[in-house]
Length: 142
Image (cartoon, rainbow, N blue to C red):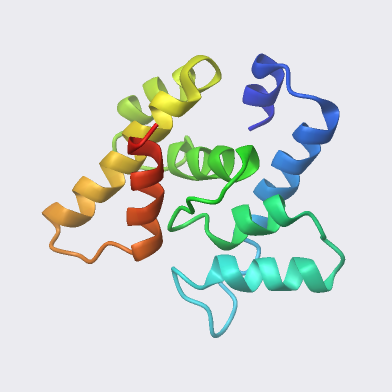
């Protein structure tokens, strides 16, 4: 995320928002009582209790696993950073190529990443979260 912020020449304030979201998004991933889709909400609630008041940062953290049509840039960037993280084992070359394109084609890469997520769930016969469907539709309408 820091490299993208540098390459995209975002303001120091926006960079700070992006990095706060990155630091917070998986803070409670392994906490008792949370599971895959609830850890973002738990982390956002805890961050708000601890003083984070930026709605965009909180929404980014809360919905980073599902996507959210109401996101501003911080949510979109966190979604990309989470999916394209270099430490993930699957599709490393594809992820690296997409990550390299983010600073120059963020919205195009975002559409590709959401489409990959949706196709993967469909192929596996898994449900698609309603927020993911709304997020995809918001991107496809543009």
